[in-house]
Every structure is written in structure tokens, then in C-alpha cells.
Length: 189
Image 1 (cartoon, rainbow, N blue to C red):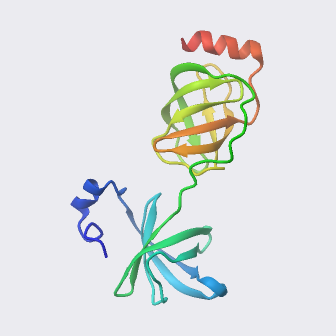
Image 2 (cartoon, rainbow, N blue to C red):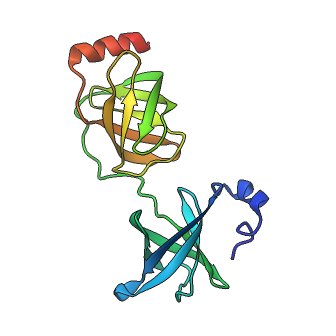
């Protein structure tokens, strides 16, 4: 077990996100489809802690399934005394695709709401009729959907295309009409 796992003050020094205490039952699926019961004891966007008697090894790729919450890929980071730390692999990009249109440099505050979460303000950069780059408070997952709202315009559904640190590339489900886009750019500048 690494020394920061037992020392909350050290977590801030190693950059690990604060984990929230939880108690959720679930399973881990090992190679060959073998499943073992687990209890998730703490959780963050980057990983979780579990209690289990499963034969886990650091570096092992597993599938974590929490009842009524779905399943996701995870990697065992550490194992000790019936407990383990799991990391969630972060997909930081999708295959490169040419942009449909050029981006315009802006710096604007917008409202963003990830599905199932509260709305919060975030900054948007490099806007085009088809998407933008946003600075997110919470790290989203590639492929995740959200709703973004520019002042004076109806909310738009977006899809996360890439994530790099606190920034994410968002693709609008519906492109802006060129005239509306020009008015929006004029207002944001």
C-alpha cells in the first residue's frame, strides 16, 4: 500500500483527488469471467477503495460492477489485508478527426450541467459552430453527454470528445446556424 493511502494530508501532496466515503455492494470480474463480491468503501472520479477476499494483484485489469450503477474497467493499484485500491483508466482522446469548421478564440463563462449533476459555471475557449473547448470543474468521461447554456441562447446538448487535465473538447449535438454563431461571437467578445 502506498503511504498516501493511509495519510489523508499526504493525498494533497501527491495530487490524488479526495475520496468520498461510501458503502456500496458489487462484484469484480477477473480474467476468465470469475466474479467475487466486493464492497466499495470510498470513491472519486479517479478510483475507489474496496473490501474483498478476491485474489487481486497490483496492475491487474478487472471489471468493477456496482449494483444498480453499471460496470466499468478498473486497474488494481494496491492490495493489503482484504482491501484494495482501484484506479479508473482515463481515456484522454478519441481518434483524431478533422474539424468541420475553424474555431474562434473566446473566453466566456457558460453554465454546464452533466447528466445527473448540478449545473455549474465554467469557462469556454476556442468556439466553433460545431463545438468548443471548456475548462471543467469535475473531470468528465470521453463520450459523456452534458448540457451547455450560453447566455441568451437555448441550452445545447454536448458530447465530450476528449479530456486533458481540467480541459475537455465538447461537440454540439446541433451546430449553430452561421448567423446565430456570428451574433454569439460578437456578444462574447
